[in-house]
Image (cartoon, rainbow, N blue to C red):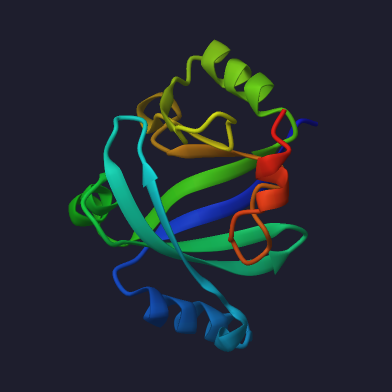
Length: 156
């Protein structure tokens, strides 16, 4: 199989409180969870900055808690729908092939990381039964959610 489940993204208003709550529920030490910050340009050219944390569930599966710091699609989603399920992420060993398969299935891209290599792409929820889908390149994220620079440097 070329794709596997990787994480579910949940948008929250207070990342630290959410990390504490999930860690308590899952009997984890919150001090082991790294809060990451990411800035990127969306597929529509918007600058967006988020804080996020990955809560490990085992077998390379995670809960990603996300808080928007600037205006952009994540903040608009939070303002419109409130806290909750934001996206479902799959990890692909061949991201270009996976993009092709999604598009052939009638699920168009909503945005892609604008870099030379393709590390992450989002697919529009209107065509995916109401779910924002993300496909990430296998190994591009370390278990704490931070970027794996070794994989990024060895693109294609």
